[in-house]
Image (cartoon, rainbow, N blue to C red):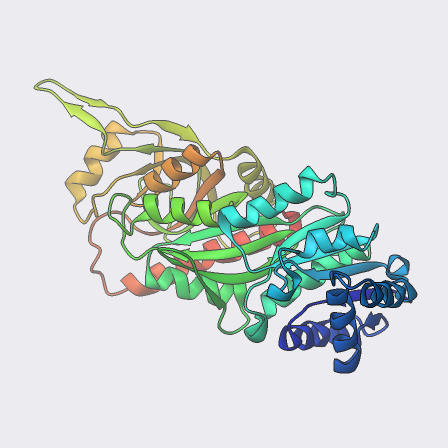
Length: 409
């Protein structure tokens, strides 16, 4: 029988985590198992730091009698209340003389969360302790609950997730979309579990899409289309990366195709490279393009190209190539012809990729852009406009989800 030790100094949070453990690890022995055991443990751990020798000695005898190192692992709160006077979950782990696997839960995100991981690494505890963002325990989303379960299985129980085929570590993945139809379709087809939990960060909001294989997914909906506005892709993605330190950023959505003779509505386009078409010098004789042509992330490109090559996704054609990106919302055939002449190898165009490329490149984060063809950059007000957009983004979501499920990251 597996044994899990739980120390959370807030009674409400304790009961919520205990509920998760009892619901998902029915054969495990969990201590404390009720409010009485919780309170006795909390008082005795608090008394370990009491200056009165007799009280401290009695507390140590009680803690020793629990034989915590005989458990398979411990779940610890990082932020202990003021009665512990500067003690956090990591220092408590060391004070108790533990050498078992530990999952440390913390309310911190962003740079503060990174500092906790640095504290673990500095004390050479990386093999024993992993940190996880706690979220709002009292309104715990199903996806966050799944993340807890996965950490317990892989770290504390040291079990392989059979759906993974290996013990690949969790990767934090940010999915970015720009329009209402894109965000609703991503939630419907990738999350598919009701309404996702909302995670407010400093200047924006993320949605928690849960975990698929080893991909811990968050969703960012841009307030403004394009890259350059205050709430456009550049600054919004940058803020999200700084807050959560994502391993990968994937932009999904709709785009216009530039190879109409060889393409169809709903085809999926994947950025092998991306170039900004706004950056240019116009002279009397020529246009000199100054946008950087930067390749997409190696890992991301390999995963999505592998699924394309295997032919596992059969609903539409999938094409890799050059994407071009700029602030102009095209509904003009002459402008499209200009882009085709200037970028004869481009497969599609859109508006937010430049910001994706810039913010990720600056922070050293792998990125890729995957969009479905919904039109050709002109005659956008056709009767089937919304239907074509829905087909395009649905194909993209299904393809990306299948890649996560089959290959992970």
